[in-house]
Length: 99
Image 1 (cartoon, one colour):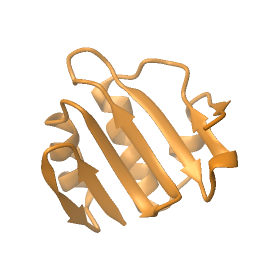
Image 2 (cartoon, rainbow, N blue to C red; image 1 turned 90 degrees about the horizontal axis):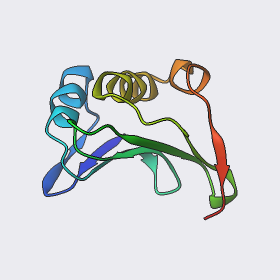
Image 3 (cartoon, rainbow, N blue to C red; image 1 turned 45 degrees about the vertical axis):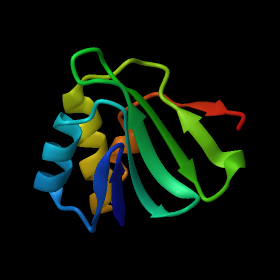
């Protein structure tokens, strides 16, 4: 697992604390990936709300949450994704995206 942020070094196998502190500093984007085609990503400054998307293996399975999310919700989703649980996916609405 790799956490990538705009203008910051990547973090390999981040724990919940690393994810929380990294997302709190996001001013652009963050991507938490299992591989190149399987990831969850967010963008937006913490004070204005975040977008959230995920891709599951290929571009035919790319989804976006239609809601603008708080830092807390995005952090919960990233930590759940990193732990391998499905609560990030089942607790939010998702819309298929054509990419």
